[in-house]
Length: 142
Image (cartoon, rainbow, N blue to C red; front, side, top):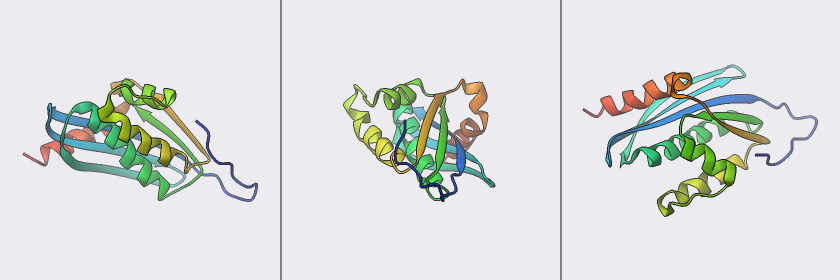
């Protein structure tokens, strides 16, 4: 997904953003994990969110991750998630379930703030850092 273009004089920074959401129930205690790296940044965040389902947690993780990325660059963000519903919803700019429509709208609005925004589905094994952080956020609640 492409958004606004930089002027030639701007420095374009690239951030790799790994996100994961987790829920211990449906709904249940929930948390998000964010691993952001690139251009001198190395950020690990684990945060508690309101009890929700796993898909909602995944969407919320991406929203929060994009907010953190926006604090560091308006250049290039390459996001990675192991949630197929999140990645497909963004690629298609459509989500069927009405519960997730607000999340998608928020994500698309945030993504538009970057010069370039990409999202890629990755297997859980490649998203270990964000996964561990999301689980840590849930464990802190027990």
